[in-house]
Image (cartoon, rainbow, N blue to C red):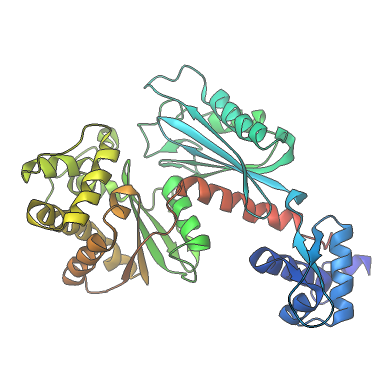
Length: 403
């Protein structure tokens, strides 16, 4: 049998498939009893008992109390062992690195924020990454070697052909051609790199507004304007990793921006990006525009406009919605997605009033008419997506009982 262990249909492979199905059910619904696991998987009671005994011996599940309040004897309940594996995620911006560690069930067990202000970082990027990771690991009461996988989210994308970061000239210190090799040498676990907006899409697909959808666009508006494209259930990254860098998109209503990578901007960014909102508010005569970073100011202005929804505030929402729909019209005309998720503070702050206006404008500007929804994942969505991505690979490794 050893030589055919990997052949589909062999007992070892079938056991591994049943083990994984049970573990996934426990993650989604646990705690569960042996009888309930048997019903959900279609396994007999003896087979379910053998499965749970095998998983418990492997340290993958724990017995945790008994069911109560039902007729008959109380049944032993089982859960996935949280300590079976840990994964980490990093959310990198020019201002800070936010790090977190999650156990295999998805629960965040440690977080750490490392400020990184200034155009010229005082510490090398490798030191920043290891310090941020170590801070989260320490907060979780773990050691660095306890983390099986790390996913790092950044603006822009690392070009798979050259290994260099593109589309993010505003992220100081991250453009060295040797950076990925240096990070690989400094970290003991596999490391993956992903565009920050793509990670938000992963979070929304696994936990939020895009659950059950295989074709959707996520439009993000916070520090910059970007998009994530999920086609056939998979992220579409493009040849250089630049798919979805829609801030550079030329659009009507904005001056034509040339040499966009040097400007780190483009027409759509100028028309509907967060930095355009405070200026628009002042042009419309809104006098109580707060001071502060433009991302925070934009979110505050949009939130107030959605709440008041009259006079200059209504005009601001309408103008902003038209700008957003102008760029979205190009995206949906090419991709014809089932769903568009609006995310990032400058979009979620507008809530249903802004969504309704953008939907109406888009229906006039584009032939296809996807449904628009506001994203559900509001607390550190980039970091949550990084953790979800790292956890998916970690579970595949830890839960593989066919070896």
